Length: 171
Image (cartoon, rainbow, N blue to C red):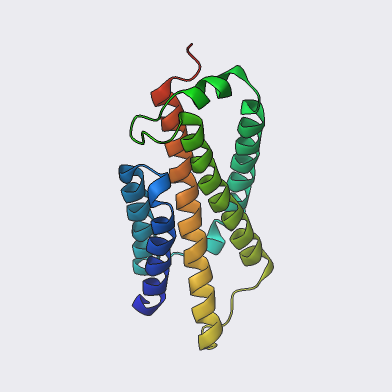
């Protein structure tokens, strides 16, 4: 199972490295820890994402709809104009709107990835344990689904925290 986990951990780290300049450092650490912990628990306890794939599909679909509605609501609003003029405190070269947009892009990626993996797992039957290659592929797909599901929740929490910390609904 360690052979299965190592490529996923490497993918998680490489993916997050591409977003380093777009997220706060603590958020990168939280996201990486959540991904690695999901992989570790998935391997250690032999969690099968197929057991919660329906819930993952439902959650991700709802979250994706909320993201689209939030982005659509921000377009050309007074709030967007205020956020476009406000500098993000931790990145002096980015506005609050720019940072929020980057977080939305990452969150949308995880939502779509969760929907894709959940759909694939629901459509494909689990292979027999005697089919080693297919079992290996199924384990990787299951771990990917678990990681995407967890990251989806983590990014949702980060976006909510970002908005609450800025108290964007007040003046």
